[in-house]
Image (cartoon, rainbow, N blue to C red; front, side, top):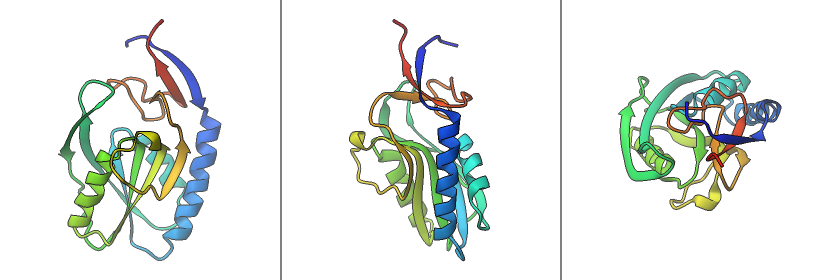
Length: 176
């Protein structure tokens, strides 16, 4: 593993407290609805696992995998669908779960894609919002935290597939 310096931004306690709050709000909003929680792989899987346990209404879950990143920290600008959901989204209220939204390109593409597949509604829940980097207009319905700057890792967020398993969120910095 490449050695990098990292400073803690959000500890496990802060993450779990906010996820419980999001679960309560989402539960209220989706009472009586046909909820499909769809995680965007790979980054959202840890956040999504905790989130679905905090949601107190019936739901089904599935995953979708897309990529707009190469082997670095910046988007290629092209969306590639790598894995499709196994559950038909037609007529369902879809809650897309993302780890981080920065430019908005990926989530905008996903929202349009699912709407075209016949979803009744598509809303977004993101652990981290980097609104200052937004290049594509998207509305985040449920947001964990606003963190404007820095490259973040941990709690599912990675750098070249490393650091996902860290129990908190860190700002990653190159070695001095």
